[in-house]
Image (cartoon, rainbow, N blue to C red; front, side, top):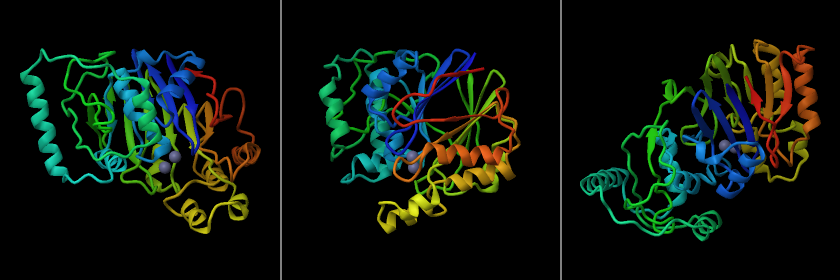
Length: 339
Ligand SMILES: [Zn+2]
Ligand SMILES: [Zn+2]
């Protein structure tokens, strides 16, 4: 069975769980670890069964709980190299080390770890650390991580006994990570991921088509417009999660400073209700059982405006069997969708 649960969607945090076959992944970790676990349980998902975390881009609403969650669960994180580097810069703006120096240090540390498999244990990570990280992400400590690939379908639930630094010492340390590139599909256990480049003001942002057991799910939020490469990807889907960020008039007349309005409206900002509707009306193939509108702005949109625009665009194609329209919310999980 394939199950898709949006735990949160919007500028205060994005997080989705996808189960396919024996594999369960988190797409983005934009909630605090505590809130993420709470919502997973609310939605009937067990955090300890997650196999990996996949990150679309480094904006805070997509990575807020990343380090704590990955550490707690001892699972690998998948991102592009550009996103990983930008994430580390965000956590450690005063880092003095060059990337080449850092990589060298990581390799050395990994070699040391391999040389001493029976290492000493250290104090378990606890919540004060988490609070520290989430309240303040400032640290000048050098980074380290283990780039060695791990089996994503066989996670260690509580890794301890290696030389992992505390969150305070190194907020960028992860149990393991892997890089992917846009345009190059890869698998995590029973889930196949096809990342594609999206136009957004982040280092190397991606959307995904995720597939498992023959079910295809498209994931496209945080994009300034829908270029042809994205249109091409969003075909033959069973589920489409599409950004419907703002109503143009509400944004123009709303509280944001002009510079922020310009950023949101730009080609690397966010999709308006109109832009999402234009895609649904003119380019979408109408194949998906579910169309979920996501990343709605709380200041510059109303759920009803987004819904009405999309309904109009779907021209009556919405029904119980096809193009069922749902809205993902910021503050509560959307009911799980199963195939
Ligand atoms: Zn976002
Ligand atoms: Zn973003």
